[in-house]
Image 1: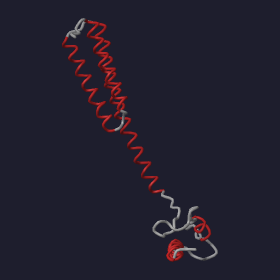
Image 2 (image 1 turned 30 degrees about the vertical axis):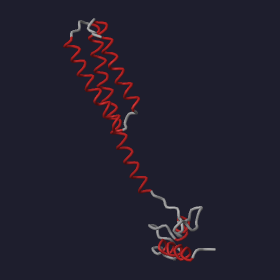
Image 3 (image 1 turned 135 degrees about the horizontal axis):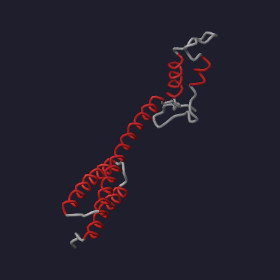
Length: 161
């Protein structure tokens, strides 16, 4: 049993798809040819009425795949830049902290370190907000930087509880 509109709509879809093809025996080199066009126009495994009574056909959405690929590449580059920025800023903090541990250290030097930590924290928070980093990863990185600062203060006798 077919719903009244199914057979007509299926035939109309087939007629539309085949309207540009010639029925000649030799296929044109630029076109698919009749047999290949019919083979390419295969309905999906579930041809039948849907909730609206229309037939379901398999559509190859290559345009969507291309657009999605381009979008994914752009997002990947953007995320990579953000992560690289965070890594660079964190490295500056760690290099400064180890340099201060090696030599003399004053409150002014700690202030410079705090400024670097502030910039790195801002970059981490932005990345977490944009979804580049998971929230826990961001928290772990910020905690690691502040731990370096606290250890430096304790070691140099500048820690006030």
